[in-house]
Length: 145
Image (cartoon, rainbow, N blue to C red; front, side, top):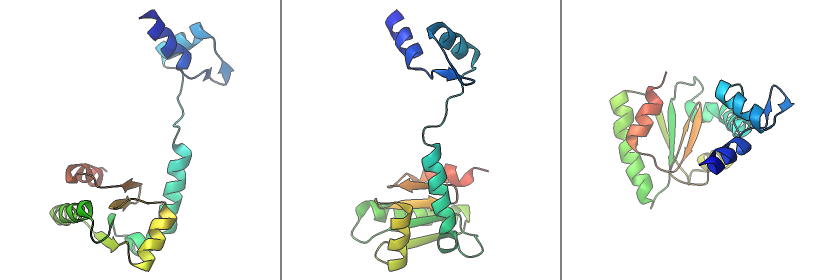
């Protein structure tokens, strides 16, 4: 048990307020919640959001009224499932949604620029999702305020 605690302490962030910390200071900082852990994906998220913004007119319309986009392709079982769920969900929530086929040149270019290499994929103003997700997950995302 002590070895596990020591491993957790040693693997915790080594800085608080810009200072290198020893083991005891790390433990104290963890106990006092003084260590602020940085989001390791912050740069990737910022880049994703920038790409979404660059393509927003295409994705969500010039008036930005769209709330979600679904990219699919033909002969894709998970795309068919996603499309069926997507249509029912967006109708149920009465939201503005768009759907694009990956074989459309503009849609393909958008997918490439967004770095989406798996279909189906979803894009919202604040996130991208690669691959099919259950409709209850999308419902939660679309219901967030």
